[in-house]
Image (cartoon, rainbow, N blue to C red; front, side, top):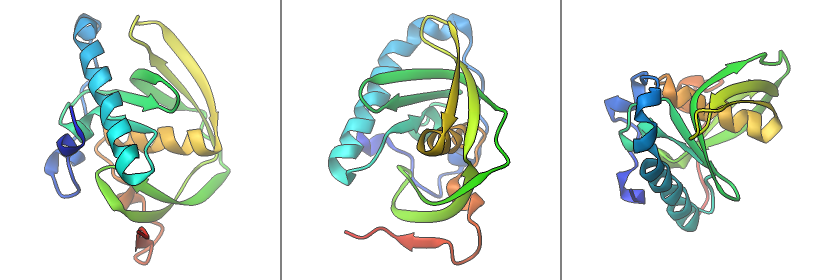
Length: 161
């Protein structure tokens, strides 16, 4: 998988909910996860941004996220819960519309339950930028884009450069 495989804003697949990953599909995941991690690195090299990507952004309609901050981490069938009432407002970006920023609100804190490549369950307590990031990627799995969460009609701007 490469940067050119990212599905861009307007493609109807970005608005479709994804199916759960089944345990029987685990052996197929390592090359997919490696490909997704590679796309993050290519995106980062070109745009100086990008920490995670959701599988549907590459046309894989499964509940899978890969985060690659210092090493690739597969996040299978995530569930968000205990989202804080406290919100943060930010300019969000997305690999599916790399030159557009969207002003929106996300929960400052949340918890996320998910499985890894060994089908082990994990629970992460997230706050601030990681909470926002995982909410963004989780939305992709439900067919929701940041553009749909804009705070108002003026909540869009082009990235500089």
